Amino acid sequence: MKLSVGQEIIVDVLSTGANGEGVGKYDNLTVFVKGAIDLERVKAKITKVAPTFLLAKLTEVIVSSPHRVKPICKNFGNCAGCDLLHMTYEHTLSVKQKIVLDTLKHVGGIDTVVSPTVPSTPHTRYRNKLALPIAVSSQGKTLIGFYREKSHQVVPTTDCVLQGEWIVDIIDSVRGMCDRHPDFREVLRHVVVRETGAKLMVTFVLKRGEVPDIEEFVYRNPKVSSIYISYNRRDTNVILGDELVKVYGDDRLSASTLGVRYTLSPYSFGQINDNVRDMIYNAVLDNIEADDIVIDAYSGAGLMTTILASKAREVYGIEIIPSAVRDADEVARLNGVSHKVTNIEGDCATQLPLLVDNLMRRRDIKNISVVLDPPRKGCDESVLEAVLRANPTRIIYVSCNPATLARDLKTLTKHYDITSVTPYDMFPYTKHVESLVCLTCQTN
Ligand SMILES: C[S@@+](CC[C@H](N)C(=O)[O-])C[C@H]1O[C@@H](n2cnc3c(N)ncnc32)[C@H](O)[C@@H]1O
Image (cartoon, rainbow, N blue to C red; front, side):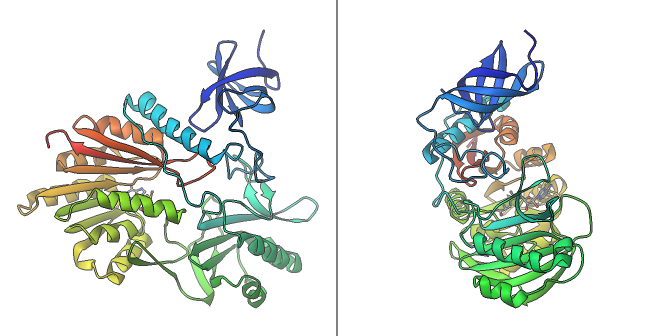
């Protein structure tokens, strides 16, 4: 029988896929069912028929997994924020461990031990960054919430279990401002919030114009210590525009972690989960020796670079975004380690090979360690070649994408042995997983 979109099928779920979905077989084809859990029997509606696989949407659970729970958010399944709220937290951790294990094996051909996923504490309300899109419904109602998966349709919300409880009052007061000031609603694109400790920095992203009722907004959201307007007139997916104007409070948010002080501007890059970020930084630090020269590739706003400089002999950060490099210089200065830190602005693909050439000319260097923390697309081939040429004692790879991690490890393991692979739950209840992989040189 020919399979077609919309057809309902019964699937026995045999395993978990790379996005946390249930995977089974139907008519000799692999079926991916979002929302299904391994060992369940489910009814699902086909949404795509491809030559070797089917995509299907869960319609009914016939035999339920003991790991299934009622999602704690009513928007689960509509909003793109969470993927795994239908599982117990413990089960999401094993799913992520398995995703890393399977991906290393299938993409990289790497058969290795993967430690259990390190949990996040807390595992709800853990995000320190929020971006809320604003839209207007066809009935003229203000919509504030999150995007539906693969769309720019706003799913309205009053809360989000991944954000601090402050989100409720932020949404409520922005809705009030929009309802009272239709001109403001017309130009408001996003509200972006950054949180450190007890303080919030709010950025209103506008096409043009001003933010009304600022005093009332601050009164209703007492954690807010700083408000910016970012003017973004471009029609792209980039949220913040180039022009930034402070309209209330402090220029930057200040915070400290692991003995290091740092500050944030609306543009600064930062990991979104403080607890897991700190566990990863501590683990990286444990793998560094005091006489090491450390190359910190893809160094962002330089927080880890400065933490590493508290122990290592010298640290070289490389980062492509100019404002992040300026933040990195500032955090090194604030913590009195500028003499040990060099932040290089540019693409790792070109800057890392140059840095390696320079370091290899020096006779006073005993040990080099390399930290790689690339974006989702992983490392360029030229970066991996230069890392191998530097012959570092250790390579520490921090990855937010198991597939590109597996691809890059395939190259690195020609000369390096993996000593540990540890998934960290940086993004609880989403399909994403962070991994920390330590490698040592085969000749050491
Ligand atoms: C996952 S973040 C890591 C940031 C940092 N290590 C931290 O812990 O906060 C990746 C960083 O790589 C930067 N980046 C992306 N592509 C790059 C490239 N080709 N060369 C240098 N940096 C790049 C991004 O701007 C981002 O700051």
